[in-house]
Image (tube, rainbow, N blue to C red; front, side, top):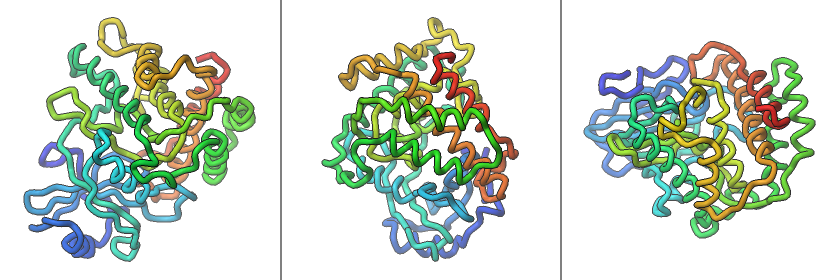
Length: 348
């Protein structure tokens, strides 16, 4: 932890950039930016490096593309900025956006700056430090906010060209297969099986909404003392997509066994205040006015397959020495692929 209780450290050597150029840019473009500037790096995160920028009494968050050669269509900080800017005033809680810079000559990559929000991010899905009533409220807020997002009229907020409407899963499968092939380091039989089987299970349901793409407890922020969700973060994978992709990805938490990604294994749902997967999904469906979902296994399996593909990309970047994370080079893709295949076959 940093000196003010935040999970920040000095900027890692591989992530350093021209702070003087950044300061000059922010003084020109951000209203009220004044005082001595200091930059520190948030710990964790293997995708877009994130930094705390302090100036006088104000604090901001900077998100940038990582250095080095990047996979196609990955690390699109401009999309993160655009969707959060568009969602201001919709009731979906997002931080206030300050500026987007797509000129790599400033600090080496594109970046954006938003207001810092004080709050809590829960890394342990079991919420061990909360009472049952708070746990129930936190999960209900997580659920209600996703439903609220999916009911936003994306055309009305200027996002009609943010992604193609319809055909989401077909396009996503093609994308993540391509991403996986681009980062492949070894033969993983379960990934090959998923690549063969998932396209044959494409759902007939072709619903369309904003899709966050990485919606889970760890990617939202709660009020410092209240069980109230104040910001949805990490919009890098957002697009115009299928709402069931988001809720299924969110629901993988109930089957995940990864403490780093999130797990509810061993939780006594009756006593903890945390809902079961079935109750959580049912509440979401009720909120958006949707009936029972056919082939739920496909939606969850697809979500885990996509996570496996992302994990392969992270692993490749760690091997190449350009990841924002300092994690050890361990490939989590084979395990995720096994889970995705077991879910698809109804065994998990």
